[in-house]
Length: 352
Ligand SMILES: C[S@@+](CC[C@H](N)C(=O)[O-])C[C@H]1O[C@@H](n2cnc3c(N)ncnc32)[C@H](O)[C@@H]1O
Ligand code: SF4
Image (cartoon, rainbow, N blue to C red; front, side):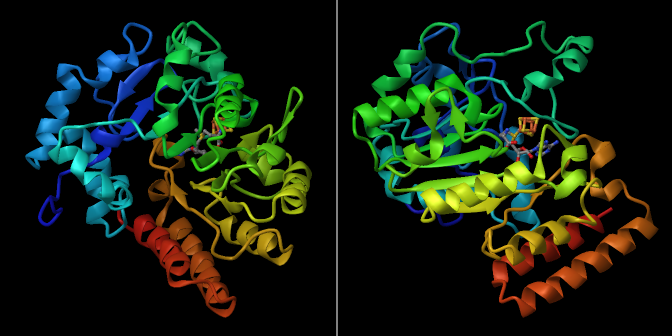
């Protein structure tokens, strides 16, 4: 099978298991099509049910899914979508499509919404700290939302063949289930599995465990630390964030496991558009970050924080700050991708 002209095909339903905080299985974190719920059925039954099969058949025939618009829109803007990244990364598994042999080898399981931060841009579904506001809107009556209420161990039936696990949350580094998975991987000596994280990087210790010492045992760990601004502004945007703690944790990481990939992942909103350059430069100058280790996550919702909502005057000011940063990146040997990512923010800013 080749991917030529397969502009709607996505490999994920053959290789990927995504479970949300409420137990719902959907094709990926960008597509909320309901394929089943682990609180009602086993993973095994959902993985081979009619809804999953229908989705696979649809993609096999290159038929678009309207819930994939997030990816299709990213592609139109010239950036790489999760669909494209996954098709490339798992091209070796295209044979699974031909042989009708799906297998969950890439896991993204949001075990719960437990979180110690209350970031302005976040909500109760992702953070237990947003419970009061969430319950006012009847989002849920529970502070802690958990994906697995009973059959958590079923996950381990797949673990021997897994190649990649992505942990987000809530906050994975304070999540019991995240450590249970790592413990199982250690017990089975599955150190080749790639571990990827989105974390607020505030807690490196949980109960008697130190995450740095655990990461050291694995061959490939990718840490994306969410930070939106430095110093006080950082704490204003992300309630719970502490700049000194972030710096100390990064230094500790460099001391214990310097070989592990570390990047920052600021969420670009009207709250930090004018200061993200400052944050980037400060961390690079402190020698705590490689200039290219940055992932820019553009906020779309809530609309009030979307940078496209800024006035023309504010947009002009932000554009100038970002252009100056692009100049700094060029002088600091930033690579083409890093420079393009910042230019893309300017383009997004001026789209409406
Ligand atoms: C929901 S968090 C979960 C993982 C972890 N607690 C963290 O903060 O990295 C995942 C990512 O989404 C980002 N985020 C928060 N609010 C967002 C929003 N409204 N739109 C897009 N991304 C957002 C966070 O900054 C973080 O990088
Ligand atoms: S740390 Fe992550 S999950 Fe927690 S409130 Fe912030 S963005 Fe949401």
